[in-house]
Length: 168
Length: 168
DNA sequence: ATCCAATCGTTTAAGTTTAAATCATTCAGG
DNA sequence: CCTGAATGATTTAAACTTAAACGATTGGAT
Image (cartoon, rainbow over all chains, first blue to last red):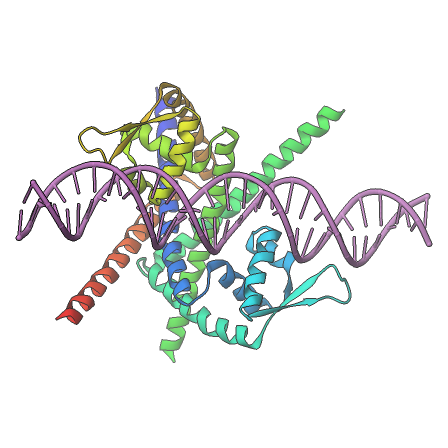
């Protein structure tokens, strides 16, 4: 029964890769989060500050899209960053629906210090792998990430096709 | 200045691998969670049921350790599973501190049906990669995960050494 | 035998996240 | 000008997660 065996082997291989992928990410990112919090910053706060640091002032909608988070979440994170005096909200005159988020001088100084430290820490965690392995991981994980997005789009397309054929 | 360049390249390579790793995991696992929830089960519930399914009855502490979750979290998940009639608690007579968790017949039937479906779905997501890529991902992610644990142990050891030398 | 520390499960408080409802603003068409 | 759809931000409610405090139980040391 080759089909049975083939199916099992395929699924086992895929699951095994998935489990290791998940564990590795969990392990590394929880250590990264720990290090960040010892710098007095949550991962969400770091992500927003880092985006502002590298891309300049942004409105909340753009931040949410870039970080793959909900709008409500960004509102809360920006609230907390504002309380700490690291960012400020600036209502756009041109379109008063939008609020542009700026780093304050204090916030800019902080992220300029914390970002390289954090990057070095993550690099140290990743240095369990050789340079070649890191390259290969980057390539494969990149392919998988983009593939999963494509998978989603494909399903969405099918659903749309089905819906439109139903309405006929 | 070779050192400067080397450091930057190393950090960039490591960060790039980390970002892709994180994105890929986020993407795949959120789709996996979506599929599970369409089967009427949260990821936490699935993880506990799956552990019981493959390893047999376990006490909550063992479950928490295996799933890398807090004890309080397992208490809540088991509460919800119990409410749905999928597991039952059984106080150990030998050591009355422990509560062993058993699948009910209904729960066993459910996980026996849901697990293969979910495994097939995850395999389909992972099939964006070739068999060789999956093998390579499994190997590299495994190395990284174990390496990160070792990194943690190493730090722990250092802290212990420092503490014991302080008490001298 | 008694006390003390460790272990296990539960509860509580706090933080993070999302989806959904809501409010304000903009913009396009009649 | 008005109306209604679309967009951006906020608020709310719910779920999940953790750490810490707590109570019950065990086992070992004295």
